[in-house]
Length: 164
Length: 112
Image (tube, rainbow over all chains, first blue to last red; front, side, top):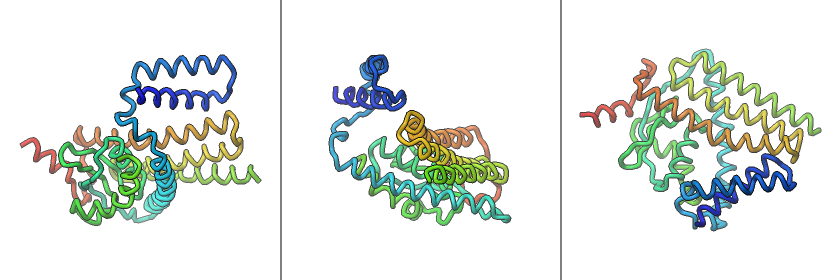
């Protein structure tokens, strides 16, 4: 039930931001469509609704966004240098890294984060023992644990606070 | 003043879009091309949209630009992920100078 309520609020808020007007026709359409969405697939949206009610997670999410923006900028400058460099300094390969995140949302965000940070692109999430396959443009180590320390450790602490 | 800041964001965004496109041409294989195109084009397009937001502020157009940034950040890595995984599953080889391919090794190991 709470999962449906969250879905309803989020979809209504998104609709109101998109239409950006608060008159009756817009509200009526928004409420009815959001109600339909919430009733038909609200229980798919989140499997642990209690997490949405702790303020601490939102604070860590803001930290996450700040770190994310900074890393994203670094990633872009790094790739731009590699692209424009006459010798094309790349040393690519697919490595395997382990992750300690348990929740699906956390793993999804970690994979997205890896894709947008310097030189790495997640290719697949392994079935067993929580590993990610990552295409690395400049392979420094092939050992899963060492690679994990370089690629994922910085963000996992923050993601754990937000999603676990 | 607002106009100048908006213009700076838009110009930087276009520059990163250009780098991404150059990377798309210069890189040797699918995965490296995805690296260049997802990173640079995501930030470049976000830069352009943020410039639009700075120009229009909290109005209908500005808020739509902000929402576009949100959706872009959520969907671009997922599509890159899907493309990379699909390419690998359908047998696209890595560049011949690539160092290692643990994914292929593990998949071969699973099949046996």
